[in-house]
Length: 261
Image (cartoon, rainbow, N blue to C red; front, top):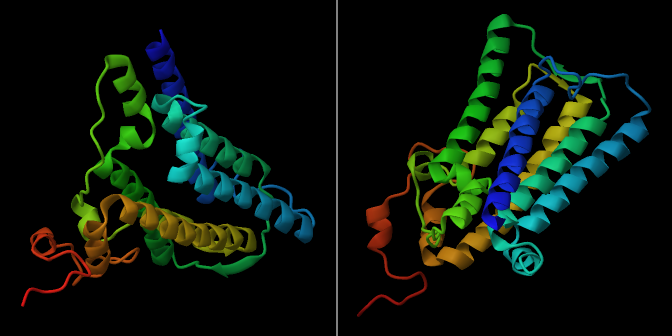
């Protein structure tokens, strides 16, 4: 019964995420939904800045704190380990839903592109970003990332193997293609308003801070293997001449080791 309840809980959290995330794409892209990043009646500028900054801060703090390994070790004393990831997904989605619901528009235009070809290219980059993001989740393990693998394994009595260092497809060219997809989706807009700019700048800053902590955790987990990967592959911008070479990485001695004489 506990396993069945865990699966139902994980599935509900995942469904909540899917609906909210789809809405978030439409929200950022100003696609027809009840509320977008630029829709609604503008209020006082100071009020909008304060409210929006608080909403962005809530999401950033919640997501960053709950994603850290130290927090997880304490958290799993309260929340059963098989549903820990689903609980993280649930809380993160709730913080995102709050942001989408309470966001205050700041419609002053920073830039506007009117050329039809340029607008079509920008829209293409927007959708490319979300496609890269989705593909990146499946290149690793989409269902483990969002907690479904854990609850199903709990039900079936399967053991989840220890994390292994892998660099499938996009990860050979860029260390964080998922975040790269986010950045394309956030910045690719033909009309950039002050509200959208605030959102894009804040989320970009959060992504950079998140990468710092995430890579620290990955170094603790994979050691020199990840350090070599970080030296070979760019962080967010694909560079044609930089690519992860597994054979070259495996042929190196541990970083910091003295060469034999």
